Length: 361
Image (cartoon, rainbow, N blue to C red):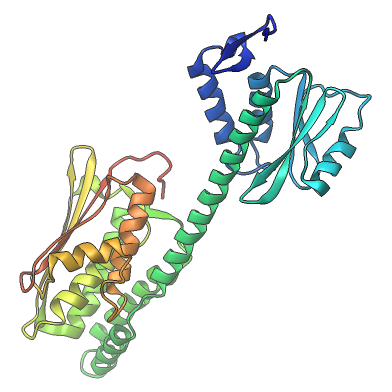
């Protein structure tokens, strides 16, 4: 079969000469996929349509969502009722052809998402390949949107994960100090209000190390008031990491876990050490307690199963939530590292880049 003069065969398909390099084809396809991450009515759909036209070397290309409204690059024939063809495809979910115009349904997860319209001489094999690229891009966009919704739901659950036992004990201590030490009572009440505000407020997706450290210092001040001499605390953070942007509410669950599962379970109490420092281009934060500890296999299972390894309370869920959120933001090579042994305490280490594109408080 002959290939038109302005095209060349790559991988058995006819592509424009300017895209004869497979790398150029893949690059254009990747750009199209990125442009469609927000769907067929997203802000970059026009750029995607131009890319599709380049891939197919067609006279004109149009993309429509379920509304039937086309975004067009190039020109579509005036003597063909394009709107009627698109409407037909939207109702039947079948390909339609009129003269040199082909309208292809785009089906994502067995559900019609829109229509691709191509005008001009186009090989059906190339059209099928490009349609596959579009469907894959739309599937990716839906998965990412679902992941974001799940992450937001997890964050809401984490915000609501305030121990009633801790709230009761903290308010009891405050009430007990109202008469003998009203100044101390007022100070603790302000700390409690600050803790509740930070934990439950509609905060953005990211915050700073400084704000997270302030939140955990407030929490630890309240816990020291509740536990007295049973809890010893040391918090140190290097100035160069204070402005590092990190996901909201990732340190507080680590500290709460150390107190609730490490120190409170020991009759004699113990110590919690929180350290934040720079290591090259990374910010490393560790939370260590000399409390009860656990079997290392339980710790591994706790992160792997999303907290299901310990069903007695929500502490494991909090650690698993933080680990999953860190990996979603920074990649699978980041996350939490848990070092522990029974009756030997626990050390949880969080490592994040000091600078990460898109992570801004």
